[in-house]
Image (cartoon, rainbow, N blue to C red; front, side, top):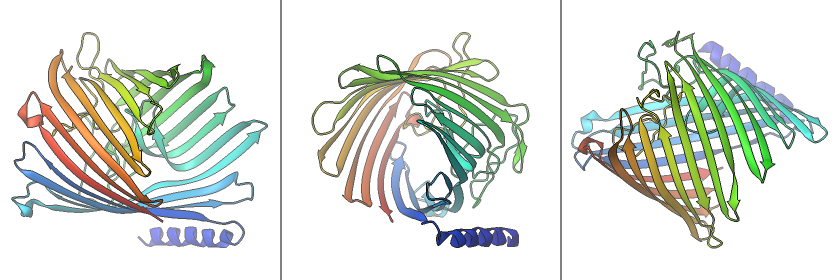
Length: 391
């Protein structure tokens, strides 16, 4: 603890020393989330989450091509699985350093190279496989007609309270959900992508490969659990005001699996509205395909069991509209099929949400969702109220 305090004081002193030469940019957000959820209204469950996130960005020269950025979060969670039994409630405090990196920007005429090292957030092209912090380094090259990125990082020192990694059955990782800071499951994650904006007919082509290599860490070991994901994506306009995105991923993880995502969105010329058709397929044990397994846990439906993206086909429509300044409303409906070992009906779901920006820095939101499953144990109803104040 003394070493942590000394490190923090040295970091604060360094920031204060350079603050007189270069302006520090900083801010933060207070977040509140209150949720009621239930499986067929018996029992009713309740959760409350309050947090504060603060960030700071310190440039080290006047051209701002050398900087230090940091972001931290303190979070309080209170949950009651059964509101008829309040003695079952749990309290959890969580702390996270979600960002701490030094960044460099090099300009070569109209081209740009950005390099950073430290803790940073990583997401894949689909947004459905990886979405979490890593400790390592990344580089992004932008030449206009070509955009390339490479990164490598380690997950074992991040906080599992903010991102859950999907492990194999042989993993010795310990998920201690009551800990203030629980070291995450240890993997070395490396990836690279190449993107060609407006390659032809205003279409953008993307190719990405990602490796997750199981290793040892301070909280267990994943030695021998290695995964590869290779993704190809295409997006762009079909006709005026009609756009699409498509991606397909091959996963290699004790066999070959597939994740395919398609969406088509139309933007009508009124009230900043949109209408979208989307479909997502994650393979199960289907012929030569094996069950798809992502890396970071992702909620695929509103079902009470909170399933991952594996062995399912989800198709639906959704829309958004902005009837008043500061008011955004959305609604969606999906049909879900079970593809674990064949094709069978799993359920339907809907959700509606409203977000109102009272002031520039004050936002309120309400989200309602339901899932009706072929099995009653999947049925779910949820009401969630959110509020955020930025400073």
